[in-house]
Image 1 (cartoon, rainbow, N blue to C red):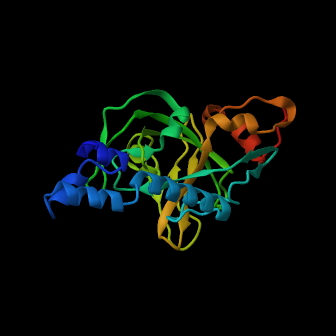
Image 2 (image 1 turned 45 degrees about the vertical axis):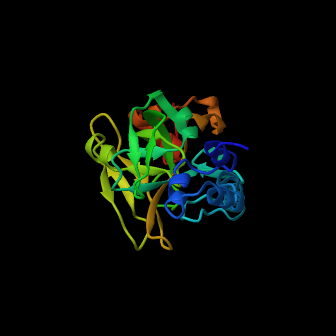
Image 3 (image 1 turned 135 degrees about the horizontal axis):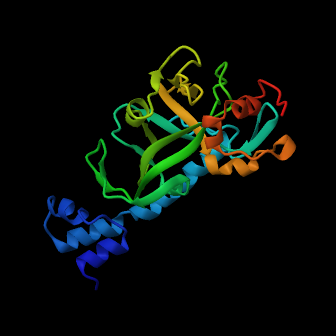
Amino acid sequence: MTTMPETLKIASLPADYETFARSIRDDDDFLRDLINLGWPLRFANAMDTSIMNFLEKAYGTTKLGAHRPQGSRPITFLSGSASFAITPKSILVDSGAQISCVRESAVSMMTNPKRSTISITSANTRTTDCKWEGTVDVLAVNSSKMKGVPKFTPFTFRAVTMEPLTKELLSITDLLKLYKYELRLSHTDNSSCFYKAATATEPSSTIPIRYNKRTGQHWVDYIDAGNTNNIVYPLGIPWTHRTLCWRPWMLAYFHGRTRLNK
């Protein structure tokens, strides 16, 4: 016969399950009957997660409103003389988040990632230790087809990685305070965005925000800035997202708004 802690682990039950069960009846036989009657939670969660991921890919929208255009199929976005084939991800604009939270797979998009000492307490009072933290470099996708805004807009934000994470959260704090963006939200059209006016050294920047009318949530669709190898250019001109920040003529060429006469 196994010990009680071993019995709980075999059934994939949390460590506090024993305390909960004994609060009803403090008896080993009773506790073993409860454990044997229960469905292993981790296995059930793995099945639910697998089914949910399949449905999201099949129908292109998560249950919370995150947008995955055309399901799992890559999409070709056309921007002037360049094309891009990739499937965007979505991050929820969250005014209550003190720091942006992304999944651990996003560590590949971070500049100088380091082990995190930050712990996040969620609404259900559960505390989770974050694994990595760093600066994330991405390209916002204009999936809402906001007028006058390019298909891709580079931007940077500080974030931590954590699992499990139902949806990625974009904190507005750094974008407003450090990067001097304005937050403009609308519930009627596709005009929601983060906006930063032009300076002497940088062009203006607009990060389009997609409003989900069904859930009332605002999302930023994005792709990894490192995926720029998939962009096809005429003339073989090299490009990085940082180039767009400080070379206005490159920005204009990429957007197809002017012709390059170089």
